[in-house]
Amino acid sequence: MMKKKLNNNSCKYFISRFMSELDPTLVDAVDLEFAGYFHSETSAKLAKLLGYGYNTKDLSITNLTRLGIPTEYGRYKLTDLIFVPPVVSYGKNIIGMVTVGDRLNTTYHSYR
Image 1 (spheres, rainbow, N blue to C red):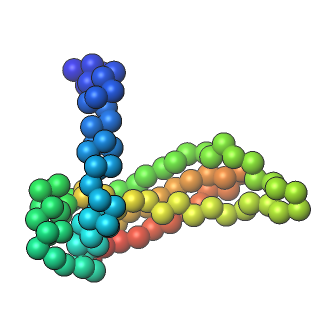
Image 2: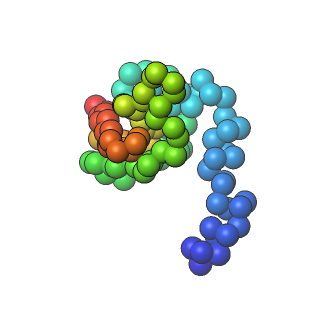
């Protein structure tokens, strides 16, 4: 059943399409509401509807794996790349990982 849904682009990209219809400032307000840095009646209601704060895991890890981009640009070399993972409704503490060249870069952020 899961494979059937993942083969259907309408199901597969529902959240991306849904979120893209929301005004970006509203999405930011919901993210900040969840992080505890902003409060409004609208952002609080939408955060609740989207499930922010419910069934949260203490630790979430997201990994972009190895980036297929050049690391040298003439005399400049890319040695570090910081991947800041997006705010997710199911994670309180989030670790983002990305490999550039032969180096694994990690970031960590947490919400109150």
